[in-house]
Image (tube, rainbow, N blue to C red; front, side):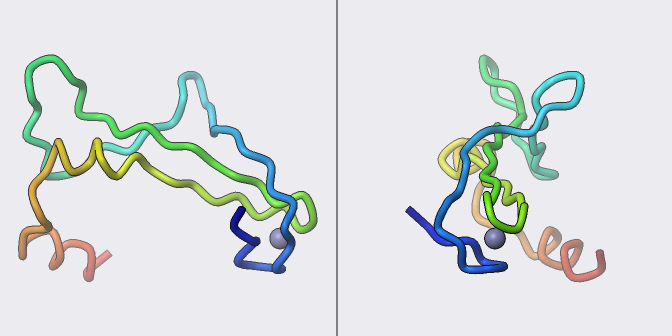
Amino acid sequence: MAACSRCGGETLATGALYSAVRTSFRPQESKFLTLETGDVMTKATMCRTCGLVEIVGDVSKLRRLTSEPEPETQKFVKTV
Ligand SMILES: [Zn+2]
C-alpha cells in the first residue's frame, strides 16, 4: 500500500468523496459515447496520521472517453 505523500504515514483509509452525489471528474475533451456517461468516477484515500485526502480517478475510463491530451488541453492546463 502507498504511503502518505505529506507525512509518510502508511495507514491510509480508502473511501470516496461525496457531496449530494459522489464527486466525479468530467474531462473537457469528452467524446460522449452512447451508453456511458462522460464522468470519470473517483476514489479517495485519507491518511490516518495527518488527514491528507488524495483523490484518484479511473484512468481506463478517462482513456475510453478521450484520446491522448491535445495541444489545446495542455495549453488550458498551463493557464489555470
Ligand atoms: Zn499523512
